[in-house]
Length: 300
Image 1 (cartoon, rainbow, N blue to C red):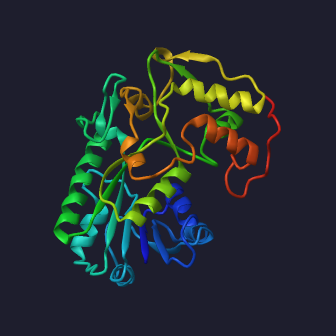
Image 2: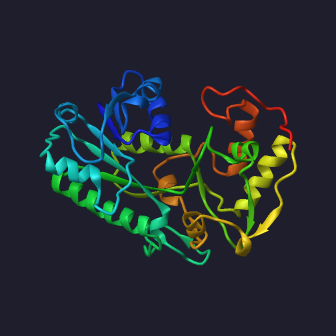
């Protein structure tokens, strides 16, 4: 097995740290300045400028068996697919492709439950691009007779990226929009579900999301309780000062089912945000790699 990651960022590095022993794992970043952080996660780093594949990448891809793509498409299309085609990269040993997408492709369902068979009516431009990229990768897999797993992720969190951090730096908000819920997914479950699907050589579409869609203000309150501090005041959504992108997230309301992934035998490490936050607080790793172990209350 030889695994290649396009876009080895936050979730890609956690996936790499979970790899089976002695599994060759390579990944790209847009800047050589980030090589050290990839190497710390056991990733052999390469630069990919989201435009072209050089001879060094082409050589590595020639004997890659598992390809994972985290890079989001843009208005010009899917940069990885376009670059592979432009360079006429041959991957004769390829056995499996994993494409990381978003539950945003479902759009707004008024708080109803959705699964992988539900209609996709993406609201935002970025989600429409994701849906188009999903279809392009599925066609690529069909053409090359390689199974493609589409992993639709909900809101990603984990060490260094969570409500604890937002409370500590003063950016946490409790926005109140009645009836609004979101699903979430811990980075460890992204990594573990990828390895699970690789082991099964499974293709298809899977929602990678927790069991419990919940109001976002509840997550902030729960984290504040663990920290022993008062949560920030409630703010009505209508009066909140938000960026256009942040406001757009609240334009979609749905409850996302993960039943299909469970049928394959996957057991979530963190089935809900409470289990994850309690673990991060107990283990003291909520600040992320290289941060001090701190479980003591912070001052408001």
